[in-house]
Image (cartoon, rainbow over all chains, first blue to last red):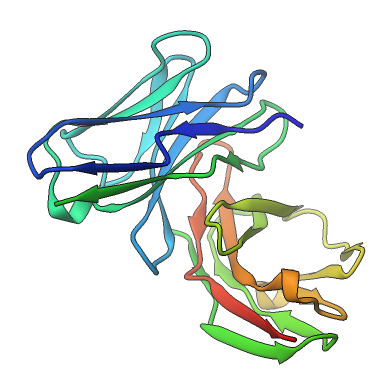
Length: 113
Length: 115
């Protein structure tokens, strides 16, 4: 069964460094998303991406965040200058056109020290 | 704005007992979608079910059943004859209208099944 994959599973970085989190959505899906979950808290929406542009973003998704679909398979989230409060699990998700359920990847745990 | 409330933070039941997880939502949209996701200890989010606002039929899938009641804005999830493998955090989520892509999650209910 097709699934969303994410790399790396765990990333440790120093405050102020740039990180890129990578995702490979399910191949025939058209909508892509990033969410984050701070440890022990609820899952929060960051951004949605469709037709090569951002379709919606939350107030969390400020100028230090960016997303890109550099080729036909990858979807990336870049954090330009990480802060301690960026430490969280980051989930990528994708969905097909005709249905609304989003399928999530296994997540990347980002630890900022 | 939309909101999802899962008032039960943690529930523990003995294996084989039935358990119901509550979900109450708020939205001004007339068309919306409700979801349940399971987050096992390994951390991934597993899609369980989607329910459209215009379809109030309850659904059963094996030991799982869902009760959608528009009148009370609730979408409750029942596990019958619980098993240890059901231990996880369960999230209810809402997506409202066609122009709005995000899922709004509740705070989750941690379910522990005691063997």
